[in-house]
Length: 92
Image 1: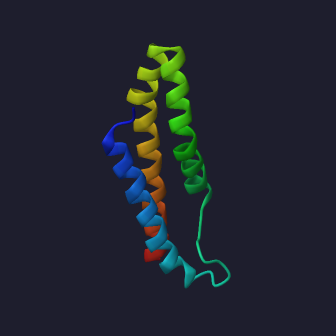
Image 2 (image 1 turned 135 degrees about the horizontal axis):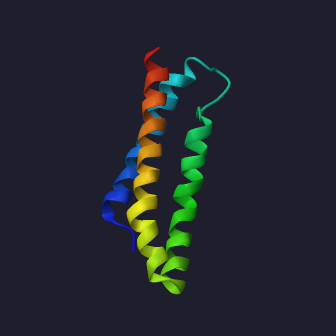
């Protein structure tokens, strides 16, 4: 139902989270994984999206096409921004 490239985005975002958390852990000693608000929102969307896609296929083909063509690109943009902010935080 969801394109394979979106699965790759989710995997890359997960790997980026673990790697940047390792570097950010040196800054903040009390946490194993360092998460930010935008990253938390994206993870919630990653979990909700398959459910929303399944429901939209059942009820409305137009809604399904909207989710695939618009919503996925918005999520990918948000994931890119979140990754850029985390990498920037690691560099500084």
